[in-house]
Amino acid sequence: MTIRWWNSVYEGFHTKDTKDVFHAKNARISQGTQELQSEKQIGEAMAEDELAKIVFHSGMKIHKTLGPGLLESVYEECLFYEIEKHGLVVAKQVPLPVVYENIKLDGGFRVDLLVEKKLIIEIKSVEELHKLHFAQVLTYLRLSNIKLGLLINFNTNMFKDGVKRVANGL
Image 1: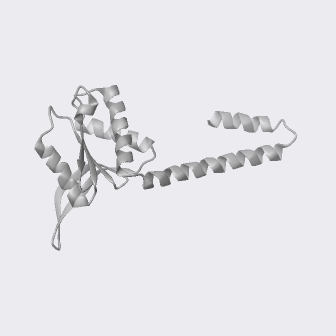
Image 2: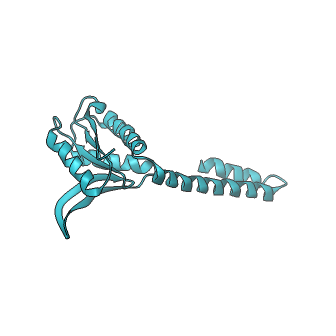
Image 3: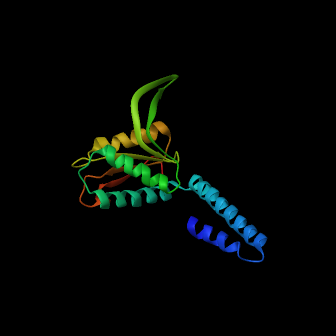
């Protein structure tokens, strides 16, 4: 894209109406900037289900490339990278305190990935998911007042078999 733009600018030097060419280029650049800003706004306005679809497809891409059997931390880094590529705000290893009455307890809970402050992702690389894993995600959802979480086990032959949706009041 940069090369094409530069070639267009260079060609503009050889025309009679150089000012018109530069005005057109500046208009395209500002339009591109506006499009990027609107993509950020779209990310903020996305519903949980739309975010979950992006995460699912990103995870599928990672699983297809790397396969099962790696450490959770590897999949976490890759998924973080893929989600960021979509222009979404994502945080990793987010501390999640427990609030009991007026006491804030730092219980050592950490959300693997938090997307747009709307979707919790818990990553596993285990032989099979247990009820405890589902309870962990549901607890994170309740403590954070977030409605949707994805429990993703990358240690499966077929990626879709390792993805479980956990809802809190949806």
